Length: 512
Image (cartoon, rainbow, N blue to C red; front, side, top):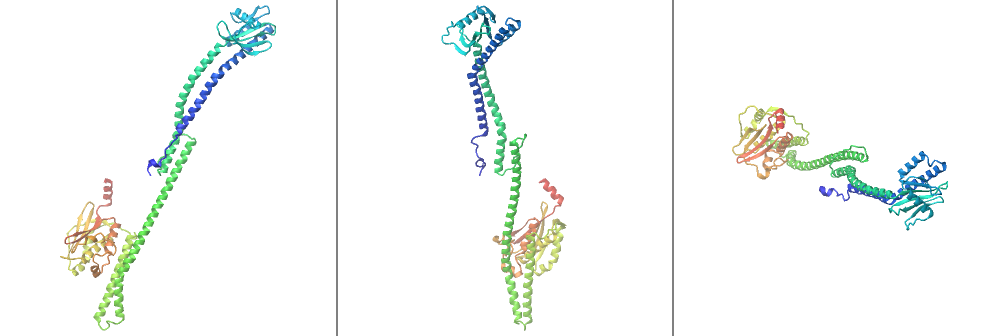
C-alpha cells in the first residue's frame, strides 16, 4: 500500500474549526456590545441625568431649608453641579421674584417655570412625563424656540418656593451617537485583529497536533525516526513525549521481533537443509556401500563355504578382494566424516603463512611412486618460494584430491602439469591432466557429493565421488575461489590462495 493510500485525508482541519469558533465568539461578543450600546446606552444616560437632576433638587431644597442658598459655598457647589451635569437651576418665591438662578437667561426660565406650574405650556403631544410626585414633576419637553429636547423638573420646595431644574438632552443623544460610531469602529478593529490573532492562535494550538498526527502516520508505516520536540510543559507536550517513548518501545520491540523472526527463519531453513542433506546422505551412502558390502559378503561366504580351500591362489584372490573393498569403505567413511565436519563448521581453520611451492614439491615426492605406477609424467615449473596465507593441512588435502583425480582420469600423452600463476594479491595453483574433457552437462555437478561422471571408471579405481565435495567445502571455509576448465587435450582444476599479508589487506580495503 503506497503512502497516499496509507495516510488518511483530513476533511475538517482543527485549525479551521478553531478559527471559526474564535471568529463566531468575537462576532457574537462585539455584536452583543453594539446591540446593548444602541438600545440601552441612551436610557442609561437618561437615568443618569434623572439622578443628577434629583440630586440637584435635593441640594437646592436642603440649602433653602438651612438658609444657605445665598451663601458663597452653596454658589460654588451649585456651579459645580451645573457644570458637571450641564443643568440650569431657577428658584422663585410666591411673588415671582427670582431667588436663585444659575443661568443668564433666567427671564425665559422664569416664564417657562410659571408656564409649567400653571399648565400654560402647549406640548403638542411631545411632552413625556418621567416622574410625577406631590412636590415636583420630571418630564421631557421640547423647547419651542430651538426645537431642542430638555429634561425638566419643576415644583415646590419645602419652604413653598417654586423651582425648575432643566438640562438639554441633545448632548446625551450626541454622546450616544458618537459612542455608537466609535464602538462600531472599535468592533471592526477588534474583528480584524481578532481574526488575525485567532489564525496565529489556532496555528499555535494545532501545530503540535499536526506534528503528532504526522508522527503517528510515520509510526503506522513503521518509520520511527521522527520525534516530537517540546518547549513547554502543557498537555500536548506531555502527549508528544509519551508518543516518543511509545515510538522507541515499538521500534525496539519490532526490531527484536524481526531479529527473532529472522533467526527462526534461518533455523527453519537450516533444519530443512539438514533434513534434505541427511536424506540425500543416507540415500547416497546406502547406494555407495551396497556394492562393496555385497562383494565382501559374497567372497566371505565363498571362503566360509570352502569353495577355494584347495586352491591357494583363489583363496588369496578372495581375501584380496575383501581387503580391497573394506579399504575402499574405510576411505569413503573417513572422507564423509571430513566432509561432514567441514560443512557443519566443526573443523577449525588454522590460517598460517607458508611456502606453497615447498608444499607442492613435498607432495609430489610422496606421490612419485603412484605416478611411476601409472606411467605418468609430472611437470612443474622451477619456481622460488611463494608465500601464502591459508590452512596448510587443508591446502595439502585440496592438492591431494586434485592430483588423485588427475591420476585416475589420465589419458592421451599421460602428462600432469602443475603450474602457479600470480595475480593481484593471490596465486592460482592449477593441476592439469591430459585426457578426455568433462562433458558439459556434468561441469555444474562435479562438486556435488557422490556425483560421478563415469561411474564404471570411478568404481574401477575405487573413487567415492566425495573428493571434489571436500575440495569445495575446504575452499568455501577459507573463502577462496576454485574451479575447473576444459581444454581440448585435457582438464585443468585450479584453486587460489591469498599472498598478501594482513597489513597489506587492511591498506587495500581502506583504498577501496
